[in-house]
Length: 438
Ligand code: GLC
Image (cartoon, rainbow, N blue to C red; front, side):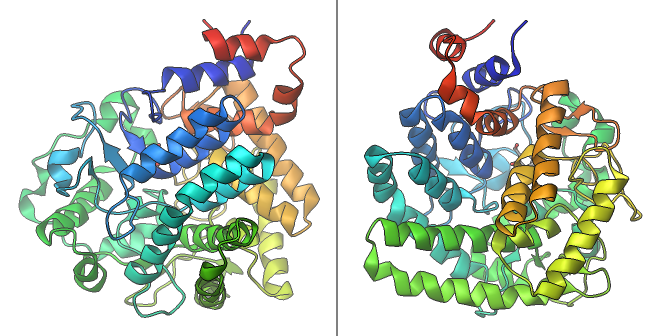
């Protein structure tokens, strides 16, 4: 029987398109931003050059203003909707019109720390691109310098249909003719594991607005149909900015230190705005109305990863974390299971995601909650070992859901098994890397 390690290697090979990796065949036939970031981490354990190529190809699609788009369309694939014809960004290569959680700098820093001189040299080459990506977030997503990132589409959070966005989506007016489109996702995956039609209509309305204003992000931020603060993007960005700072010091990029230090200070202070005392945790919040989402998510648990919160706030978050873990067989669900709206199998409204667990566990460990970090890591491993490389998992039943043969799940699994990969005395992994596993 093929081991899960071999299976993970095979998944990355199957999804390899030369210089980039698709998240999974058919359902997601293009290059996705944060998927490529995590995939690079997994690839790094197998083939360092290929890992750096993954990041370089993504950064090739970076916009002139610094934005790294959430999807890069290298060809038109009828299996996916909405494709390049809907976005019409007029970029080369064609891309979507907004970004995704900026994990790149953190992944690069991790690869540099694990690696040698070659890795440092590769990081030095792309450092200016990472810096301009962060600068874009500061300018386009926080133009008022409040220290709070605003996302202009739920897709920018990477947590597409999380209940977090329900308050923001309620304010999106859908025109009558929006029904004239055919979804492709529900052809590949059961519709009860995907966003609803109500949500999809609103997702497309926001895209249509962006297209109409020529993807001018000043107009979209000020007048677009949706603008919310997301603990996920906020904390991932803050952590990535801290990692960028460490990397800048390490690589001797002295002229950039001051600017990056200012960002760290600004977004640490701004994070306080996301603290929801009523629930005892960090929650999404509508930037225009100030209204809070009242539930905790796996993104709320990233506050430790970003290193924010007073001792009192941390203790409240930890109490909630323990309560949620007790209610689930597998941590960490994407929505509080004891809160209305929890659906154990619907995408970001309940299921567990390996990439989120990877970041949550790191944060909990940094903050010295080792027992909780251990639980998150061992649950991730068990879910994958029992179910294979599923897109996401049911936190109650432990079942694999969504697309199968998923790159980022495979990549996280390989990272979790990094010690076995280094040892590999039987050479099984080396053979799998060289020939693929059938
Ligand atoms: C879904 C996820 C998003 C991911 C993409 C590709 O849209 O919500 O986070 O990047 O699929 O895997």
